[in-house]
Every structure is written in C-alpha cells, then in structure tokens.
Length: 104
Image (cartoon, rainbow, N blue to C red):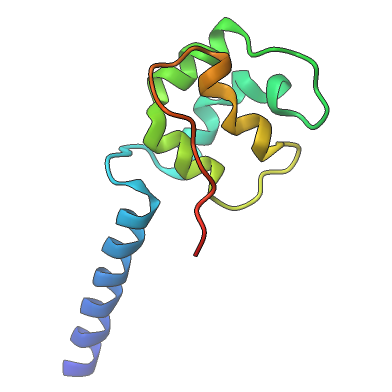
C-alpha cells in the first residue's frame, strides 16, 4: 500500500515537471491543439510554397505561443515540417515570439 502511494506520488511529480517543461499555460491537450491547427496543414507540408491562410493564422493566434511550442516540440507529426511550423507566428504576424526547439 505504501509503495503504491509512493509510486503514485512520484508519477504525479513527474507529470508536473513534464507539464512545466512543455510550457506552462497551455490549456489544450496535444491532440486538441493539433486539431485546431488543421487549417495550417497546407502551409507546413514539406516543400510547400503555400502561405498560411487567414483561417490558419486565426488558429495560430487563438492557440497561442505556449501551445504551439508544445506541438512543435512534441512527437513527430507525419507530413509536417517543424521548421515551417516554427515560422507560423512570423508569417501570421502573431503577437508572440516564434518557438525554439527544446533540447533535453
């Protein structure tokens, strides 16, 4: 019983640390953030010359820097160029700094 409680406490502490490392303040899950950025797919496909649409830029602004950075630094997303995704704030003239890749 004590070992189970200790394990649960350690897991909760690890989850808090991961949440802080991933960027505090993002109220969306990884999946819901990804869904919100579906309008950006054409603009972040590898070698795409397509600029972000107004719908994409609205999604980037609504999502915010913290959640966008969580996505950019999360697991690989098939068909998405991370470098192009990191440029979305600048291309959309969003009022926040672009994301940097986190290093462990």
